[in-house]
Length: 123
Image (cartoon, rainbow, N blue to C red; front, side, top):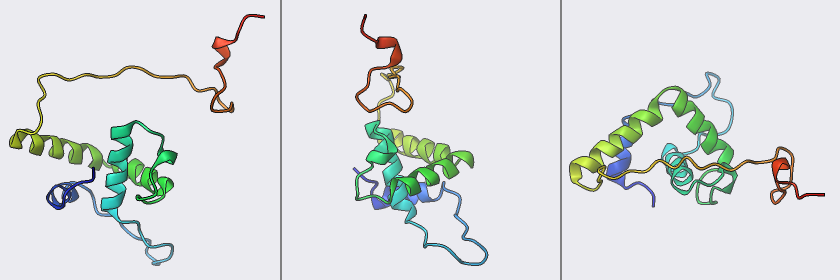
C-alpha cells in the first residue's frame, strides 16, 4: 500500500530537499517517493530493513534516507501531516490506540534461530 499521488504531494512538501555533492559525482539519487514508501513498508510491517521487498530501492539506501529525514525532522513533520490529513477526511479514529511494548532479544553474532543465552536448557 504505497502513497497516492495526492498523499505524496502532501508529504513531499514536508521533506527537506536533498542536496547533491558539489562536484556532481556519485550515483544518481534514488527516488524520494520510492524511499518514503519503503520506509512506510518497514514501519507498517515491523520487518527488518534488509527484508525490504525488491520493488523499493536497496534497503541501505532507504535506511540512510530514513536516518537523514529523522535527523532533520522531516519524517516527524510528514507523518504528522499525513495523520492530520487522514483525521480531516475522517479516515482515522484515534479514540482507541495501542502501543506495543513487546520486544525480543537477539543474540549478537548468533544464528537467526539460536536461543538467547538466558534461555539455555538445564545441564
